[in-house]
Image (tube, rainbow, N blue to C red; front, side, top):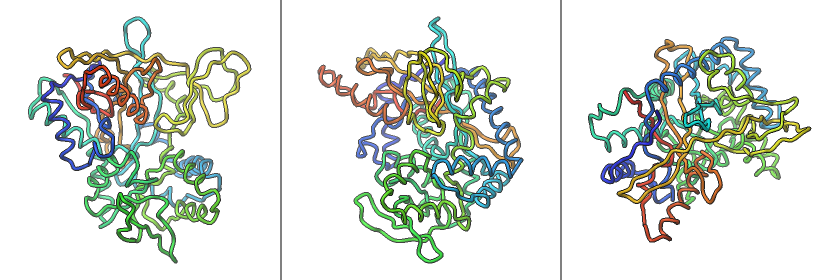
Length: 451
């Protein structure tokens, strides 16, 4: 069972009012679709996904017991992103210490809810990746959900997995007055809401959102210029403790933007390879397990049920496929290809057979709503060598997207969801049936587990 929760009009208003009271300026950022309504799944499905993700956790932790092999794996992948040979051995040893201390690696196990055309569901794994990006926002949206549903929704909830362990571990690890959360443009970019949420939860007013473009070396120190949303310089600070959320495509974007400034590029690469800094999270750790590793799933007892054939090289049978970059995040660099003969998978990409998304009808007659959605489920785990296996911590989330717009399928990435929801609101407005963003279920959503 998978069902999109249908709030009453009053509950929907409470839900959004609670989110807005968090002072994150949702509407001002033109992002009223960042968070969606809760998804309800059966306990049976939750247990299956939990067990499958546990198997992936065990596999990755086994990798982490061989320190040299782990370093080689991480360094090779990161060097392929930056195009230079960086020595990350000492930095990667910090990761091992984090694993032993309880911080661990946040890992996301993603599955697409598909349709086998016989009116039943199939759950297929599309991604396993590092996911520190979501540690902050989940508490906020769960808080809003509980407020909207009431204090004691026992009739709905059996259990919730939350990221408490990961956040507590970061707080224990840091024990420092300042943590710097580094992204591309954290004050103005679309993901500011999530960044601010993580920043506040990790260290409150003692954390800083810093753009990678505003970091530079002065003598033996790394400094950052802190700006406000209007671009005004607030202060210059010394950087020591870092959570860097940049994913490979963003790093490539930064290096491409600075391609005519080789000295500046070298400075950023020096920053990434400086082991004197306290790397709470280094971007090289983002792809310790990614799409090139999905073949592992077919050898795991529960996860094999979710395995989708993954082709990286060799002969490709005729058919329709998703082509994806091996280290892409958020639906980036994905396309649909039709293979007839003599097709070679481009370097750095994989092919997976095209999956038909399950169509979920969202109908609320009293609100005049009637449209279709697709669902992608995610279970996040906090991998740690220093935490007992049954206490490692996990939580569920989902991305709910409009099924299609103007006959075109909508990806489950947040940019695509924003664009599609805006289009739906415009369509209703043109038909003189004005609806509000808080009536729509689409966005990143908490998952509730039916008893």
